Image (cartoon, rainbow, N blue to C red):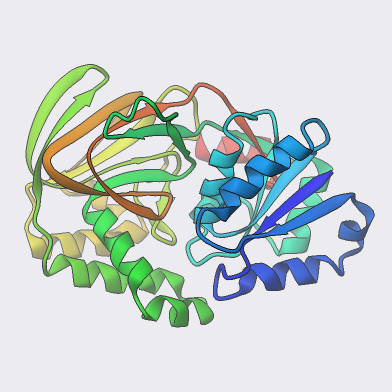
Length: 319
C-alpha cells in the first residue's frame, strides 16, 4: 500500500495539480494506494499518525506531496513508526529537502523511483522547547535556526508577496525580500550555549543554525558541503557583524561564499542547548516559533527516504 498525503495549497496549488496529474499515470494506476488531503496546518501530522495505525504492516511508502513544512509534519506523525519509508514529491516554494537529498525530476519520474525502491537514509535531528519533558521531542529533517533567519522565515510566511512569487516560480525571492525587511530592525542577542556538555556565553549573536544538509531558504547554501551522516551535524554561528555586512554576507550564501567571513564559524556537534533571558525566535523546517530555551540532539535512528536519485550517488556527493 502506498499512502499519499497531499497539501493542496502548497506552492500556490501545485500540490493538488501534481496529484491529479499522477492519477493519470499508468504506474499510479497499477499500485494499491490511498490519498489523504490536508485541510489545515498540522493536519498532515495527524493524517500520518492515523495512516500508520490503519495500515501498520502494509505501507510500502508514505508519500508526501507538498512543501518542506508538510514533510516536517509527516516526519513527526510517523516518529513512533520509524520503519515506515517516507517519500517526498516537492510541491512547495522552497523544497530544500528535495535539494538536499537529490530528489530530482518531474513527479512521474520521482514516483517511478519510489516504486523501484531507490532510497537513501536520513538521520533527523530532535529538539525540545523550554525543557518540556512531559512531551516527546519533535524531529526535523532540514534545519533548525535561531535569531535572524527565524525572523526572516516569519516575515516571509506572513508576507502577501509570497503567493505571487510562488506562482511565478520565484519562491527564493520571498526570502530575499524578507531578509531586507528584517535587516532594518533586527537586534542581536546574548545567548548561552551548551555544546556537547561545554558551556559557552556569546554576545552580539545574529544567528545559530544547525542543518542536516547544505540548503535552506529556497536554495541558499547555508552550510556548504554538509554531510548527510549519523552522530553529528554542523552548527553555524554568525556574531559581531554590522548590519550592512550581513547584507553582503547573505548575497554570497547562494554559492556558499559567506563561510569565508571572519564573523562566521562552523563546528560539528552532536548536541546543543541554547537559552536566553529574553524570547528567542526560531525556525524549524520553515515553521516559526519562539522560546526561551531549546535542546537539540542528533538522532541515531535512521529513516529511509524513497525516490532519491540513488543511494550511492547521494552519499558520494554529500559525504
